[in-house]
Image (tube, rainbow, N blue to C red; front, side):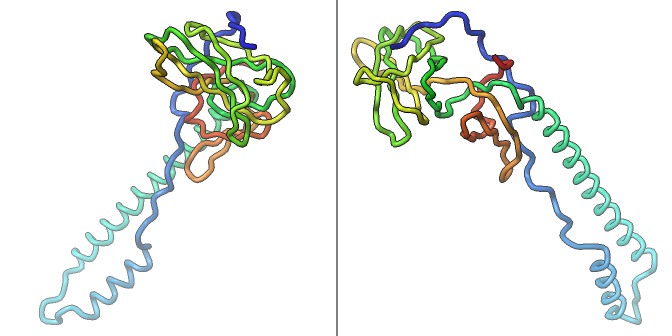
Length: 220
């Protein structure tokens, strides 16, 4: 059974700059020793009747050194940015994140946040288990923002423990006009970088990209 729940605070806005991860650090295409070897070869093979002036060698050395320092400076700035991002993410641990991640049913009611679809005159909640099988379908108030799902399946019995996903079909004059995921809160247990993305480990074992988080709130 689905019941509207009016006592839930709306999700807090996300911290700025925490939804993405820095890309791979730039690399210097050559090193200083290679450049020196190239200069040596250049000196050995120059025209003895028209040798390169020492000033030109100094300019080349200075140019390479400047580029090298600039790239290393950029690498340092990106490293500092990464550490600052991780420091900010540390504040996420212990918070409750609002996302479309699957919900692990444990026999207790589940709090859901429903999307608002203009023009909908009916709506229904559809629940699928981890295998993608529909296990519940119930009518809900299309204007309700917050709902509580009691965990009862289509057969009238409590759904077994396990991960479930929730979607809401919005209808107008009997026609489906939108299907959107219902969001839920889960406590963040860990935040880490993985293949260039910020991944969040949620209570219950689920892991999601932080880009899927639409809000945060304090625990409880």
